[in-house]
Every structure is written in structure tokens, then in C-alpha cells.
Image (cartoon, rainbow, N blue to C red):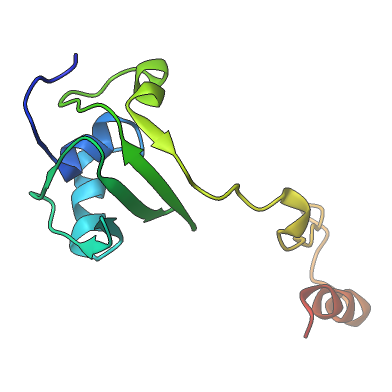
Length: 124
């Protein structure tokens, strides 16, 4: 499972340690500028080495990890957790997320009072 080489492609490593679901998503994130290695924007074929700091913006939050082990193939979650040191800020608590209005299915169109309540909830 562990690669003895000195470097691995960044898109392959991000996928291998389960930071993204697919390698193509990792490559797309690199091309879009959502991945930085040691503060620099990089391409998907960039070589990552042990000790590099990888910043990945994905799914609405930023992940900051330091490479501690190089892997080329996708590994299990327990092994993947050993391959990097996670320095990411904690995700925001669920209470801070916006409240979503809920209507029962089949309740029909909202009344004027319902619309005012929805607008008040959304902060308009």
C-alpha cells in the first residue's frame, strides 16, 4: 500500500487519502485553483512529497493537511487517516447553518402569512 517513491501526483494522492470521492474531481479541483501546495496553485500532475502542506477547498470548507505518508492507490479510511496530519479548522456547528423552512407535502400554496413568515426566516 505505501509507496517508496519520493513523490506522487497530487490529484492521485488527494483521491487516495479520501479527501475527494474520485480522482477526476481532484484533478478538476486542481485545474480550478482550489488546491494549493505550500501556498502555490498547482496543476493535477504536480508532484507532492512528504512534509508538503496541501490546502483543498471542497464541499464548502477548506481542508489543510500536511502529507506524512505517500500512497498511490486508494486505501481504507483507517490507513488514510495515517497518511496526513489534519490542521483544518473545525466545521461550523449545525446551529450556525441557516434554518430551512419546512412545509408538509401536499399542503398547497403558501398563504400570504406563510410567505411573510418565510421571508422573516430568511432575513429579507
